Image 1: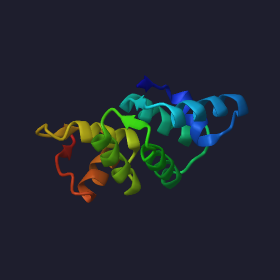
Image 2: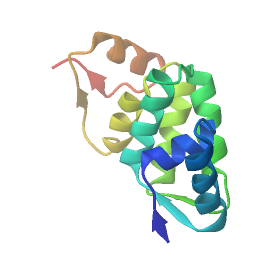
Image 3: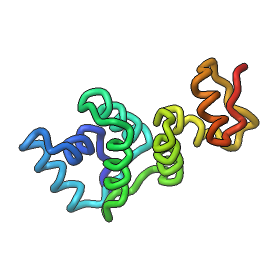
Amino acid sequence: MLAIDTNLVVRYLTGDHPQQSKKAKAVIDGEEVFVSTTVMLETEWVLRSAYGFDAKRVCKALRSFGGLANVVFEDPGLVAFALDRMDDGMDFADSLHLGRAVSCDAFLTFDQRLVRSAKAMGLAKVRLP
């Protein structure tokens, strides 16, 4: 299994660089690849900030990518949790944080928008300090 970096995922999903995209496609379609949670976090950020993808398009792209036969996520349950929350309007990074903290008594933040969003989604353990 090969571990891949964000730039391979982005090239695969966008096809924006002919040479690199072709190489990324050959690796990802031809080898079993490991994708860490941090690579997923960075990929979401790059697609949104550099490529202008909206949240729905990011979710669709990342779900499609995760559904490829050769792609192995470090923590598929966490990524699915985060993408589901993102579909409901929460930031992907915040969703990853909350998914990772699920066994904790609470998730404390000064981000009042996150608190409101989490409560609206039934994630009552998110609160202000």
